[in-house]
Image (tube, rainbow, N blue to C red; front, side, top):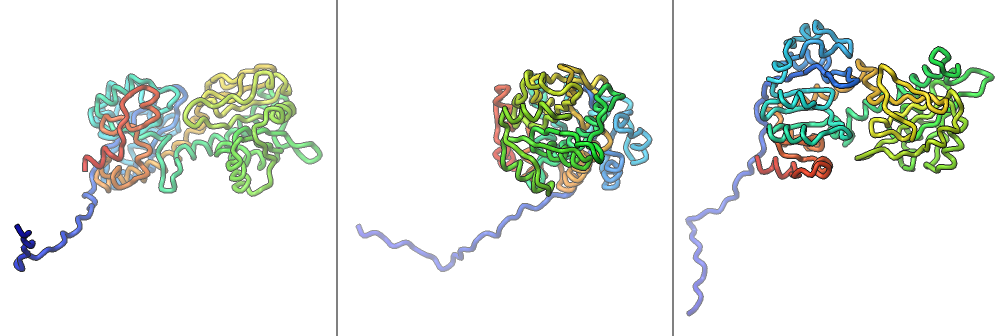
Length: 404
């Protein structure tokens, strides 16, 4: 049988469909709650009164727990004048749809969380507990972490600001403990005409190392920097714009330099876990009596073998006649500056979230915010946390694409 030709009718017209564009929804009114932090050494607050004023002016609501700004020297009056509602009960703050915190979520706060809330806070990987994560997952929480939030240029703006503060503070702290009033050996950081400059060793050439080096140089000290990444050493040199003494982490060279230094700064960052210990107890025992160690990497375990965590109340201890300053969360000691830095990042983000019509829409439109989201409606979307606590991992991109 001969195959019949396909029949084409002239009465049909074939046209392409018009393209459907993703139109941004109308803005949403946000209700933001800021609880008072009760955790160890936390003085910061995530939104300053000025930032709250901007949020209120854009039609959003802000509820601040009483005395939440005390640590950063902001009063309830500052917040109420900016237009915030002051709550005298923590529960009232947790009625809001969005909770903004400057410390990780605690077990007590887990009980107060409402289903489907959105939380912005640090995680602090080192002290994160599986139970807290599990409770947040059960309540279908969406959570964004300070540590992993990226801006348009691919940097982590909050971590960067905190590192700048910690780095700049390091030399001020060291200067304090070198003075005789604090039982130091009575040396002025930097020295003066006719006296050799104070010798500062910085281990780690990240942001903390760079800002510590800047401050030390500005004070007139002689600075030597160690890091295993040649790229980071080059970047530091270019950013500071002066030829510096740099070296890779070679144990013998490091030990020799530490023997004669006045200040040693530990500024190594542990990428996803504990910081490597690069200075042994033996090396510390050979350091000059009265010299000062400031271990900024104590947040991730510390890079000096002799380091152990101290607090803002009792910041130092002495071992082998060397003064050790090992306070985690150094920026909290400079809480007002730190609060302004966090607020500068979060306030524009909150405004954009409102304009985009809420968190679901901003996650869709702003790709770089996705790196910071570790829980999305109860699904764990951070691979490192899922590996660590053996919980099911879900790819965030697939999740939000499937919900469109």
